[in-house]
Image (tube, rainbow, N blue to C red; front, side):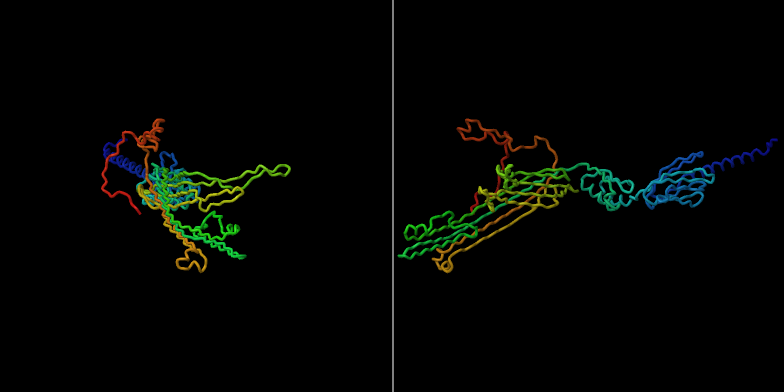
Length: 490
């Protein structure tokens, strides 16, 4: 039976039913979207038509996330030691990260059907490390990610020192350098040229005045011999080296004699040493420069023994000692163009002073005079600093004579010798680093540029050694100097 009179009422009922269905569907879809705590990654579970997809969820240690699902009845946690899930009500659950590791969590409804599944990865909370790196190195693109129990640094920086600083900060905050994988790349590795100047001036002054007296006189059967020898003791030398003529030799000839040897000497010398080694190396790498030689030092004799016990074929064994100019340095380019240097420089030379003479053949082993400096310092590019310096003055003075007679006025000088030795040394080591770039070959010059040997006719007739020295067509600009010039007489 059809009731046509109630058709408007029927339409209103159908409209209300449709509206109620739309609201219910909207509420159901809203319930499927989880609510995530601030600052954490939002998982997106999908539940449609009874199908379920596993979603990945990353958590920090001690961090949590809120999940809203319809009809939560049961939950399965694979490893509660890594992460745990707490069901607060039938529509809300909490997932909490406990320790570093991975696990999974599955939610079930009242019918026993899976309504959501999560793969949980609990990592370190790196927000504090990121903030510290951002504060210390604000202009770098360093990223930090958790890897198991450690962290990995990636990105790029402008210098090696920034990469080192980032690694040290991360190691301090995560509990050790063994938990940090530093994969930061340096965008441009600077090259540093180091110029070292070793300048030394040594002055030696020696003044000596000495008299040796010897006499031999015969009076009948009486013989009187007198010998007064006054060596120079300040520099350990005799008054007259190699003098074999003595009064005793004249006495054997039966002739009376009186011999006097007078030596007066004054000398002054100046020695100047200048070394300027230059060396270039990449920032963070070490470089070594050596210019010099080696000289042999006898260490013993090695002899071969025959089967009968006879010794023969003896060979002198030697070892070699290096001398010359050496430079070793390790540069590290810091921020703002500053350079940290680990420098070791040495200038050594063979010297006859303190030499050793010995052996059957009278072999003389020389000594080595060495100036060495080693330190770590920080200098801006193009700046100079005195790395080391020495001012040394040594004075020796000695008087030798016959007691009593050497104190007589005027005549006492005949019975004594005196010498005075004064040594002065001034040494300075200056270092200057430069951040350098590669240039074209034409911009560089060699010491032999423009050198050409002279022809036979030029060397024979004109005594010329070379024809050209210097680059042709290079004219130096004329300059006027308003300064004092000339010779300085000391």
